[in-house]
Every structure is written in C-alpha cells, then in structure tokens.
Length: 63
Image (cartoon, one colour):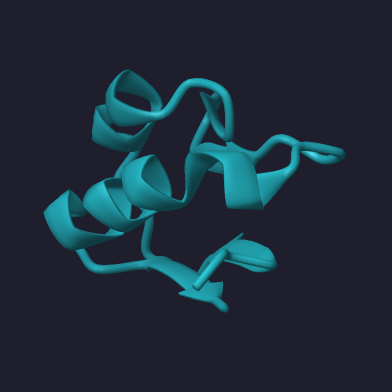
C-alpha cells in the first residue's frame, strides 16, 4: 500500500540517516523534519526503509 502520511515523534537525535535514505521526504535541520507537499506514495519503499533504520524509532507513517 502507498503511504499517505509521515510524521516524526519526539526523541529525534538528528543522526541524519533518514535524510541520507530519502532526501525527497526528510530534511535535517536541528532535528529531522518532513518536507510538505511531497507525494509520499512515490517514496513508499524509501520511507519504510528510513523508518526501519531509525535508531530511536521515531519515524512513523500511515498507509
């Protein structure tokens, strides 16, 4: 299924891994943020990979 919503819960350590995996969706500033207006469905696999590899497990998504 395609991802419709992505968010980051409290606790991000700003490691940058999510941005490395999927820079189309994630942007690192003081902490990771989600880029608005992106068609998350186009990056479903990369978003899931970023969530699976997040060391503090704060990347969440809904399908």
